[in-house]
Image 1 (cartoon, one colour):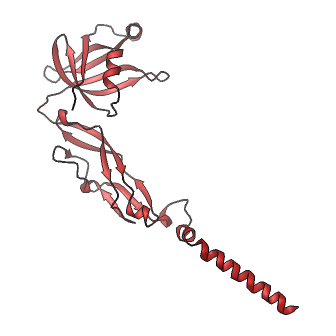
Image 2 (image 1 turned 90 degrees about the horizontal axis):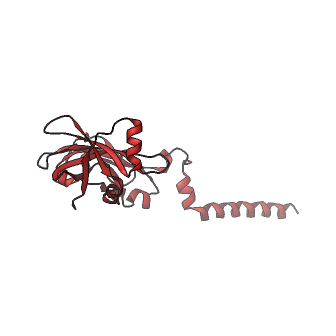
Image 3 (image 1 turned 120 degrees about the vertical axis):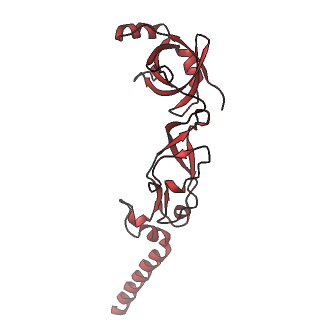
Length: 224
């Protein structure tokens, strides 16, 4: 994992008016929860440097190194508030961490692959869990987990206990929680019962109509 280093300076500006003036100078107000000393330290960061460091980062909890007057502090980016209209950061919160102690975080789950029950059985894939809670060392924090669901068949469910995330991660979410399920089309609201079967045999339906029409024409000819 590449190191994200951001310069942070002590901040004395507080209050709505003060932080607005601070932002106009190109700085982002923030805070750092102190692990060793306790309490919270107010900081400010150059907006341009922060946005460049965060470019391409999709995870909500990112490990960074704060350069605070020459003192390097490992910290997790815990929360970032953005301007509603511009989408730019207006406040950031960090928490100091130890690189040798695990932290508890929430990581998003992304389903990959086309389930067998969808590809062959005409089923519908439904994701029922979108994040998982784990314990992990700060240096091993993932941005996301890709979960392969290609082996799922019709009416099969993938549970948290089935996830194979690797030895680095301790899963905290209960094992019996379902992650994804492949449902039969008949069990999905909005899909008419037997619709998949009907769509699969249009030739049979068409032929049946043609036979019925032919029989009607034959009867008409007999009456003549």
